[in-house]
Length: 109
Length: 112
Image (cartoon, rainbow over the protein chains, first blue to last red):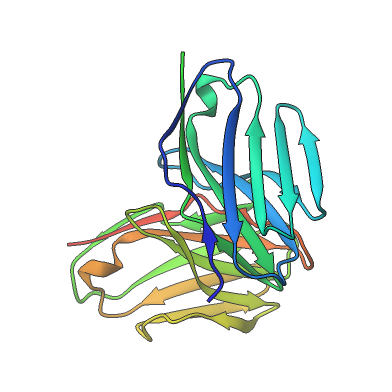
C-alpha cells in the first residue's frame, strides 16, 4: 500500500513569515513529487513539482526533496493571507498520483 | 477555454437512483482519471484510462462504471446510489511520464 503522510494542521503563521509544510512517502520507486494548493470548495491547483534531490525555487515557493529519507517539503516565504488553503502533497509512480491528506495553512494578518 | 471540464457541478439525488458525471479535456492528454474526495478532504483514485483503455481500477464498488468514448472524454456512471457515495468527484488528466495532473472543477454529489 503506497502511502503519503502529511500533518493535517492547521498550521498557523503570521503574515510575512515562512510557512514550512512537510510530507513523507512510503514507495521508494516514486519518480516525481508535487505540491497542490486547494482553496475551500475549489479543485486542486498544481503549484510546484520536483524530480531530483535538493531544492527547487519558484518565486516565493521552494520545494525540497530527500529521496533517501523519503521526505518532501514546501516552504512558502513572505506568507500572505491569500496563501491560506489546504496544501496537498502528491507522489507519482507510473501513471498513478497518490495524495496525502493535506495540511491546512492559515496565514494571519 | 476550460482545460478539464466536468458536468454537472452539483448533483443532489435520492438513494437508489442512477446518475452520470461527464468529463472532457482539451489538453490533448492521453490519460484521464476519476478521484473521489471525501468529507475529510482525502483524495483517492478510483479509475484511470489511457487512450480509452482502463489502466487503473482501484477497489471501488462495481456500482461505479467508467466509460471513455475517446481519449478526450471520461464519464462516470453510478448505479443504485447510496448515502456513502456523497462526496466531491474530480476528473483529471495528465500527459505521459512524470507530470502532474490538471483537475476539473469537481462535481459535488449529495445523496439524500
